[in-house]
Image (cartoon, rainbow, N blue to C red):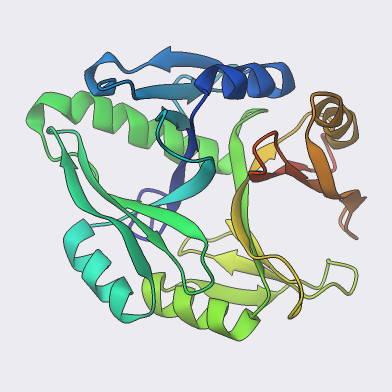
Length: 270
């Protein structure tokens, strides 16, 4: 099962009323650059692709909607968005945006899991006109999943106040496997295997009074330094920086709009 197989987390979107403020924050923190998608920018709404330094292809996007709210959601690949939306609804997910076709590029839907965490389903293009772009995207994403560049999404994390409900939903929804992480220094943390030969994310059991979230984790050159920069830019450090027994340094941060994201660095980078 490859990186661009159904059930993989491959994209993220930041929904906002003010894309300029979002761009400024993340550009200063990660050095991200941005490119406007002219084909999807209508009715005062703009879709802006995000590129990390040295990355040849976008890793996510900002969706600006003056009438919308502030939110961040991860996107999971689906072979059939309509069928998966119906199936996941039966597992307890709430459908927030029904299956929607975007020209010949993709179809997508936005849902919330049983604990209210947003995520999107989207399909790959089947258009012959876009096949070269699709092939290039797959090559880059597959390579970057093994060796992401700084500023790119390198991890995702589920935080839960109900670990059994969360594990049951994502296991049944996408076939994810959860393995207790012995390196987490006694914390109730589980590695998430989404079908590849290495963990792609983690599940943090916060207990009944803890927060619920589904957030991206971005590769940092220096977690401690970048967490400090984020705080100076107005973000809130919710956890860390801390390290596990294997020397992985990580932090959980809420940006200016309250959207959570993680910073992570391996021992060679920390």
